[in-house]
Image (cartoon, rainbow, N blue to C red; front, side, top):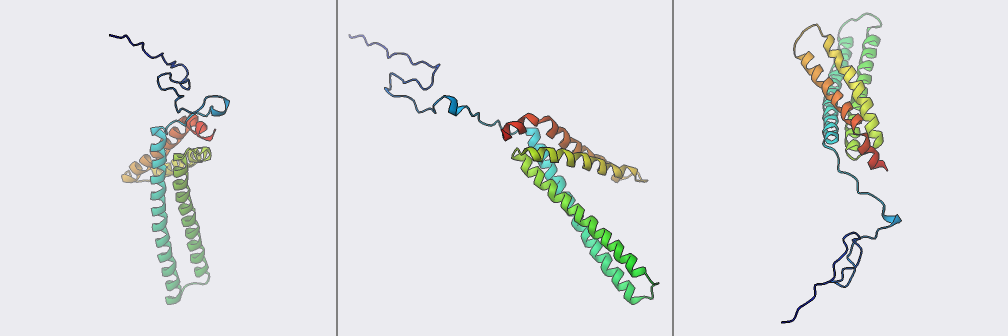
Length: 188
């Protein structure tokens, strides 16, 4: 019976060292100064949740803007019809036209806000640093604006909805503010 010698041990300290049993170097990327890049960390769950929350809030804002826009169009049409059908005092048409113009401006701002929220939510998922900062600013402003519903004289569902929306915006601010390291690693 012949005794065989075991193959020489491979050094696991250097993954690129040749494997004597195989007779060739393994197919690992070369180590050195040129390959110091670190694979980006996976997106934290809190960033994903905050981004989705911001996208949902933006979609709801768009829906509200569209409903207000349809209402403004109906109001402007009714005001125009009222001015032609009835004997209205002088200057009434200009007041109604100005009021309709203010509503149209508000609708444009609301639609722009909703689109911006959706865009920022999508870009924050991709790890864009500007989206993180913009999301924090949108969250602070949105939370403050949603607290306006607390001044309602009735204690109905408006207060609960205002608090829920404010809490969602506060969550977005908290999530983006605490995930700065991940956003920094994505931009590096």
